[in-house]
Length: 156
Image (cartoon, rainbow, N blue to C red; front, top):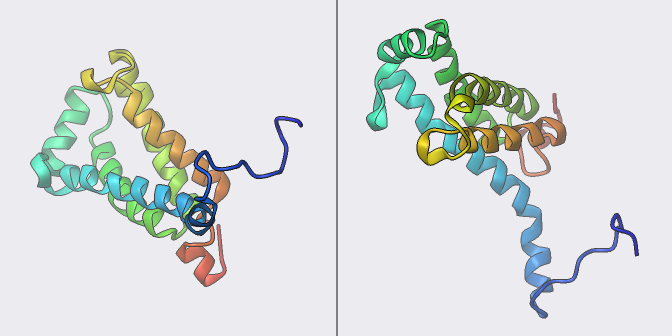
């Protein structure tokens, strides 16, 4: 049998096949929804200062002074995290939203976190890299069957 066989894997625990079959269609939308919704608090921190954030003005100053990025990137990052996160979560314009999230995370990884190292505990690239790669998967895959894109019959 080849590694690329199309036969389904057998469950590790016998007798859970029915449960696995019932739940497996929800795995991908669960990842999409969680990935999108986990971006939301980061965006509202940047835009409104909620959840211990500093709001857009202070975040713009931080982006310019500490990161050497244009101040407008703070607003763009916040908007992508809020609106891109919501769009990704609900599967609306999924590929576009996911591409924006991927681009944002790529900038964060390369510009901010790569110089610090790998581990997130010290501000490294681990966390934004993971979310960027998850977003990239949805750029390739789209919103899937349980998305607004599928509901309206259009996917960009």
